[in-house]
Image (tube, rainbow, N blue to C red; front, side, top):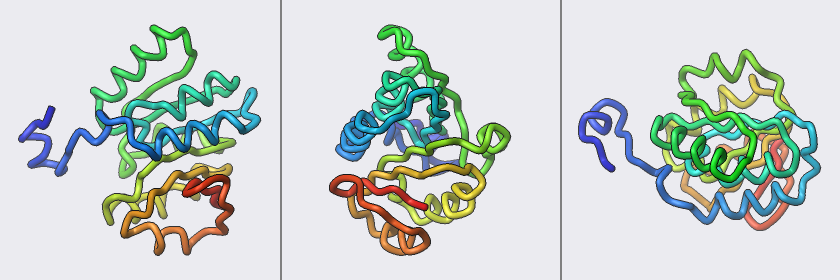
Length: 163
């Protein structure tokens, strides 16, 4: 699954292809939220478990990832399971698609802070998206400085609402 050309351009690795514990933790929290008829955006969706949970909870969901393979698999998985959601390829440094649709009611993210460039891009992007941010964060090195920019409420172990 590693494409040397993609890695050479963006240091792209297929992180999306694994069901990470943070995604599972976030999906469990999402199940407990009242998202009926709310507009929900997931950033870095990968396999999209939180997006699927939000859609099953009645949300209007847009799941995004920068990997086209992730987006394609998520669309297929949702269709096979008769779960209505949209999935689109979106880069955080080219966010026009999701900014145009802002404000979102809820923005979801699981384990997004694994690289310094991610924290920088998210600090710029999240305020443009509106709504509550619900983030599952397992304790990556860049997390503490990122979280210091927000009012943080812990919803579950290592799952936070940012305001």
